[in-house]
Image (cartoon, rainbow, N blue to C red; front, top):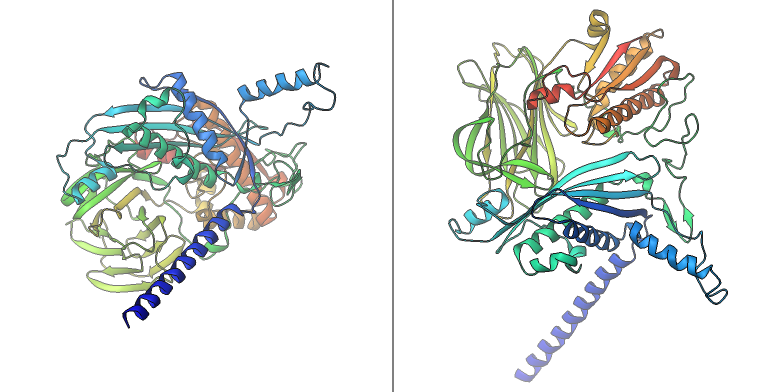
Length: 596
């Protein structure tokens, strides 16, 4: 009997090992058989703007980034300019007559890149002082490590993706990573783990700085793969392309000569629309949220110190601090409590509130976020909450008025809670869906806001709250146009550094399109404006491209005659508010439509 049991057990183990081997092989095959189109990319100069990082180290980080991108199957990584110069020497030698005929490399066969990656090391601290914050702080608290001595390293890098043909910056992104002798904030990075630590970086081998470098490179590869627009993935292999350079959806989209990525003509006539650069609006056709015109409170935590309490907030109770995740800063809650934004004025008669929250994915416990509206006596008169990432609820005077079970648990990433209200009405939204519509409220006197956070105590699952924007709702577009001759809108949205219109802009664009349809004689100049962050020339170019994107969308979607629309970019040159505060900068980031 014993021998039979042993035999059966041995047979079971053999089957199990075979199944595991098949599973591993299947996973490997799935990885190496990626068949999607690829983008051609080259890594240029990575400069150093940090005191403790010399030019050799910065160049070495650039080499490691190039190697890591080559391990990412979505890219064809081409040689750097320095390497190209060496290749040219070999080609010149082959054509000099000194190399056996037909045996050397030929000229004119080099492939060209579509995108150049450049950047600068802006922070480099092999032995940073006083960590104590961010996600590292959460791990320390969760594992009882408070006060434990540890060696910490930090690195910050600014990355730019540049269209080589047009010289336009496709995306600019600041990245940072931190590592201690016992932990790092790197979430993945398999393609970076095997990249050799080259050049002068060898001195950091097996030190926290090595972990930090690998972490920031892993973030860079992930971010680059995410942010490269779809039209650049055009190479099929064997010399075949899916589309002409700069074209989208298989069309070159030429306007006045060469096709310009994201560029509609800035004037002209007819219905030529240029290339439409906008996200798919299909999911937003029932989305009627329009952000207020004048920002009265704004905080994206960009100027905050990691590990400190957020300076633009007041604490009621609980534990909150600034944390860094990805390329953003967040307010992290590690113990249930409430905070209030330090608003300089009360809520106006028409107002909007937008709050970013973060979900760590469907496999993690969903935190509880509560957004409260208070009356002048600071009594809770309305509440909008998201619980467990699976449901929403809205209540007025402690009475539930709208509850909704979500079709699926919130996926990993950023989600946005929104309120659009007046003294008698309130609408609530989660991402692109309206979850409550209260048409009439008696005795409702909204005055201020507070946020309650109730986290799960799980170290791998931090509770994060991001950018908040509170704004005053303004007059209708028709009223603005009749009274001032222009429309000022903050409802046409773009990601940072991008000229691709976000889906949340649907309602605002629909109203503009309807205005143009109803008034056939109306002509408008679409004018883009930015805040003062970044270089002046870059901001001017970005604002021009954004204005062109809006024009192209209106011409394509609403068949507006192109002769009725012009597009201009003014960058940071015409602010309507001070660029010294978050609120002022948010007000300056706008699109104006001026009557011609």
